[in-house]
Image (tube, rainbow, N blue to C red):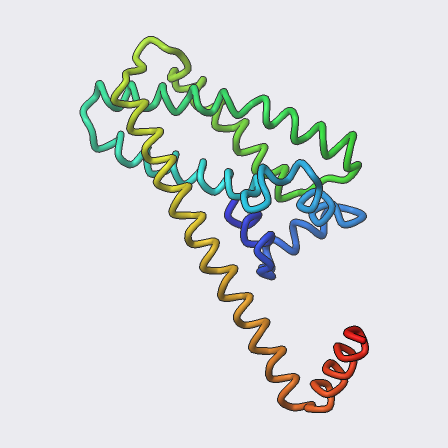
Length: 193
């Protein structure tokens, strides 16, 4: 999920590029720019994936150091959360197959990890409602909100830095070629008339 989010932010990571090159006809690019890849203008599904996986990891660490009742309750809460992700897995794979007609290997890896989560929870016996408690639910939801908010803040900082670097590069281009400023001004004056 972090590779997917980094790719969407414009980072060129060799591992991500190798995975995406497996797909024919630019599958990663098509899927990541499809309508279904965003919840809102600023929130991408990759962001949700980062929030989910980091939150689950943090919850597992916290639950492993807690008492046995909170551990069992917390793990069952996480298992139910993973089950809630299964319809999304089905939607994502179907959407890539039937609507976009291209597959994103990075996205499919995330879908595979979500499916493996459910299988692992089932294999070790954590699927169920019997031990879910309100404190465990509150802790999981709180951590999800904390991680999601933190990730969105970090993402915004990264995007702002990229914009600043782009603007700085454009400024340097104009500084090295002052005639472009005059051309741009002449074009603006012509539009005003």
